[in-house]
Image: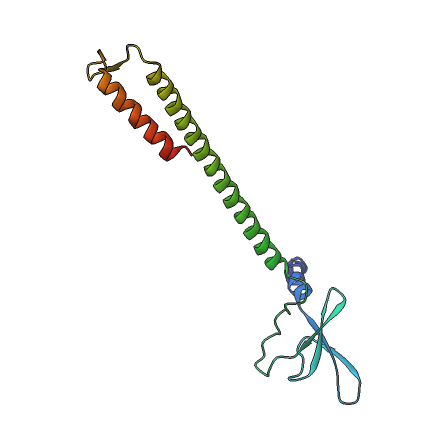
Amino acid sequence: MKARKLAVLAALALPLMANAEIYTWKDANGRTHFGDQPPPNAQVKTMRGGAPVESTAPEASGSAPSAQASGPKSWQEQNKDFAKRQTEKAEAEAKANKEREAKAQKDEYCSNLRSNIALLERGGRISKANDKGEAIPMSDNQLQAELDRARAALSKDCK
């Protein structure tokens, strides 16, 4: 039973050890040293994936050096960048869809205005429905006023 618990603890600790950074530096005698804590104010190389990355050690505060801007991004940074790009893409698509809908509505509105103008210019008996749904014929003055209103709306909204 103890061996099983020990195996589980070792399995849980393995990812923590794999994520640890290893530093390499040279001392005053020119000898190369490796360790998980670099000495303060020394020229240090951080080992990542077997490849060294140049950096200087942090002050004696005990904190690990941060990743350099020129070095490869961590998976968290890459994931954050990917999520940002996906959000921007979705926003751009939503904006394009909204603009297409607005254009389609405006085109339909302008088409209806042109149809109404053509109908009013043709003349004849034209009627409007009242509140009860009964057809009431329009007088010549009413037809002209409606034609003027439709032409003004067309010139204003449908350029």
